[in-house]
Image 1 (cartoon, rainbow, N blue to C red):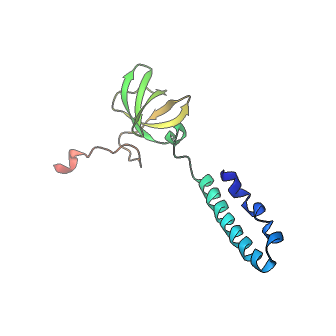
Image 2 (cartoon, rainbow, N blue to C red; image 1 turned 30 degrees about the vertical axis):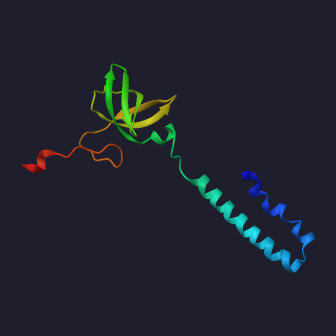
Image 3 (cartoon, rainbow, N blue to C red; image 1 turned 60 degrees about the vertical axis):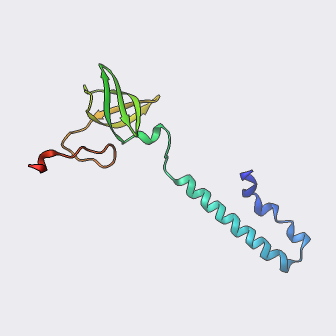
Amino acid sequence: MCHLLLLLPLVVLPVFWIVPLAAALPVYGVVLALSAAIYWYAVQAMRRPVQTGAEVLVGEIGEVVESRGANLFVRACSENWHATSAAQLREGDRVKVVAVENLTLRVEKLDPDAKYRGGLPRAPSAAWLK
């Protein structure tokens, strides 16, 4: 159905054979402008970054929720994921997603003192209360 909208300028061409030129030109102009607007919105939609799926996780900050030796479970983007890491991680460690391989996250440990944009909210420090 949506492909018919792309062919709209070609479908309307017979209007030049049916209607006098003085009436056909404005009709075709409106159809052409409408088609150009549809094309523009379609191109804009295709240029947007990925917003769903596993690809969106790369670069996200998460937290280890369960660690059983080499088997890790990480909470990232409000979901629990199976993960692997080259470093030894414990529950509560903050991690960054480096890659996604077959719905398994590859993560690396984050420096606990560094500040990162996005990801999980950091608990407020009690140092300022003293």
